Amino acid sequence: MARVTDTGRRLAWGAARLAPIIVLLAAWEMFARSGAVTPFMLPALSAVAERIYEDAAGGDLFLNISVTLYRALRGVCHRSRRRRCARRGHGPQ
Amino acid sequence: MPKIAFLPVIILWRGLYDVSKITMVVLDAIFPVVTATVAGIASVEKELVWTARNMGAKNRELLWQILLPAALPQILTGLQVALPIALIVVVVTEMQMGGYGLGGAMMQASRFANSRGVFAGIVEIAVIGYALVAAMAWLAAAAAGVAPGGAGDGCVNGNATTLY
Image (cartoon, rainbow over all chains, first blue to last red; front, side):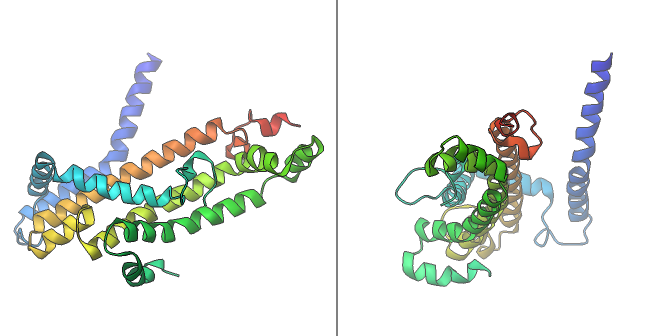
């Protein structure tokens, strides 16, 4: 019984944390479709999601993400001439 | 100062490709980590150092076994500050120099007046940034939990307290 309410509370908490994001995305979609702006100025979220899906299907998305992540993490974990990562506790230099 | 001001010089010195972008990230991301490490080591409890010295610790042992573990939570906090900065700098340099990468793809879409592509880039970068920060926070929490000097993070069972 207590476990059920715990799970319910956790679900409610997760939903409460997600709510602002969902509201923002819904507002984006509705505003884009309302006709106040042209699709060129603000494309609808569904069109953008479609475009992301096309990128992912074509493979470009993962190439770009991996290149960007490689550069960012390589910069943070940089250590000249020794392959040691600062995150492993070896100090920042 | 904003290190991004060095971008043109770095392009002249190191070219347009990965090396200059990574150099910019290093320039921007290293200072939060260095300052956090200095502050963390400066705030290690003196009793810990005295005890280690009393037990005959050499300088090297003092550094690796006392100072760095005790300062680890603050070093990880510095890394948590540095990681979003690194992502920002990577995207900015990619937008400036083009080529592969999320920023480059966004600029290319913008030049082709492809607004769907631009907004897709915004969403992708937002998701990647959230995932990176969440992963780093999880890593920092995990490392602070196992660190011998994790007492500074609210852990009462670390070696730091059992020394007394």
